[in-house]
Image (cartoon, rainbow over all chains, first blue to last red; front, top):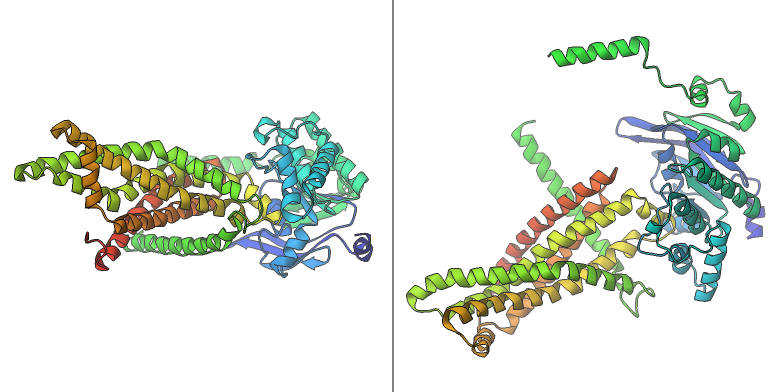
Length: 274
Length: 269
């Protein structure tokens, strides 16, 4: 394990090069280049429809880009065999937006699932690991509950426990703070920072929540209309003058005032007459 | 859009369905051994047992009552005609043969199609929407092996069992009619039933029910996996699954019956 880490320590954990995706004639991602360095927390920002979910799907190997390559731990997952992809995936943990827990299994069974299915560990060992992971996310006494009995925040913590069950080197979060109140969301931020500190994990977070992004990020990247318009440290990101970033940081809406609105109203009236 | 275009589009979508169903069926079939107890992966068969109970328990009352009603209707309708020829005892043959060969498996399949095709597609569709299917893939677990195959195995065992039970219900309804109308004795009735049907009828019935189980589960799973977008798409997929599986069940019934007829298997010994 340490040998592998040492051998790769120079190159990035995730390396995205020239990735383009289009659905029909609509371009969703346009020549995206992005590196996630080992041991850092990189936050991928972007509004709705910016292509961040699509990019995430490519990184997880759930869809293939039209062009470009994605290397995870040095393996190009856009051009590898299913076995190699499976091996890469075992080194990645993913916490999905709504948790994606299996409702028919208890919290313990959910966390134990990857251990049961992908390892040959004895039941007693699995139970111990599950307890440790639940303890790490602060839910050691919720093991016997079923997912529908949990609050949104707890569900996400269980999803994190399941994601780290196999001790992955890379952890990916999809919208960790979506649908959570500020207190629970802040707690999840602390958990992400704790995972980085305690296990030295490389963490990629996809979000549109600025506050949490600036709190946890080592570096920030911003997607806009399928293109990466900035990849920077926090301080430099704040000073970026790209109009879209300014708009995002200052929370100004798209221009619907003045001419645009008048045009819209005119078109609307025209439409209702005919 | 011209009529021709519309017809063409519809035909293409049916062809696509047929192709997708075949591919999925083959994928599920290949994973089926992994679900079996002893030879398969440990504990996986328990999911299939759960599915058996889910499919069986939800469809049994409906299939049973539908068969009772249909059996009674069949007896009533045939009695009014046969009585004119003084051949009321042939009601027994008609109900027994009609249910074993045709109505038993068909009514069971329609009941299961209504209950389980929608339930299966809604369940899998929800798993797609909540990213559970993605989560399985990312964890390196095959959704086909993990969710589709146990459902199929469960249905393969449950549907023939349900078919036998609902056939018995239908035949029993025939007895009820005759008991009320001409005071027929239960033992005499069942003797006549046993004389009317042959073992081959039962075998063909079970073959049909296995075919119907395949259609219902595969259509349910396919429509579930096709769900894109939000929860409202799940509801639509459930409706589509019921409509398509019901249609295909009746189509398959025609094809199977025609094959049996041409092979000369339908003529009673």
